[in-house]
Length: 273
Image 1 (cartoon, rainbow, N blue to C red):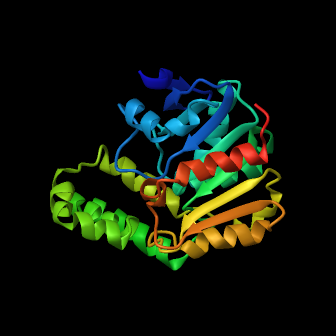
Image 2: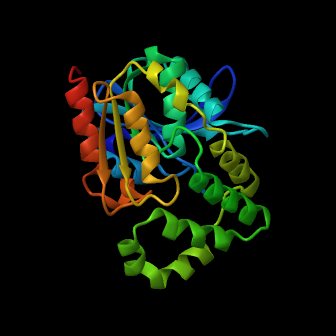
């Protein structure tokens, strides 16, 4: 496996969750992914390659959601599970990088467990609901509940990716939607509903570590404004922000310099290894 990548099941006092780890460094970097059609099972190599820029300086941990997701599961519950996972692994002062739903959970983690978070990176995320994220996620929940999984994918792709990207691959979209499958529709619905529980905006000032907000101004899932208002709430003395003018929710995949910007922020904000 590249960079020592491995996939394992982590058992805490409250849950079991799948985890992927890799990297040559000792400094912990925690990546919290967003809502996905699939789990991270079998994704050790692709995820390691995607985040390979961090492999030299960090021991990277990518956490999935808990195996058994109960009804009424919330974004705050995701943060609680991550906190339990870090304590089980004996990790503290981790650099935390959350994307989308994972970024929402990362904010709860930094507010509720500041001792676990050295720096916080919030990618294409939000701190409270707005009409866009409520309507988009509610639509995905309804389509999934109706069993129309192709419609979910066809709705997701143009909302996540830039117009330029969609135009380039528009002929492939029907094929992608036809052959993309949900691992577990019921689980997806429960986790999607969790997206609609995020409400941490008024507590953001409790975050004590350096924060980097990175998003896309054309975000059609959570809006670019959602990223901007996080930075505004935290203030310039605590938070840096970078917004891609032409990109949207999938900026973390489309922007070739996305991870480099994250790495630069972490090393600049807390350079000790």
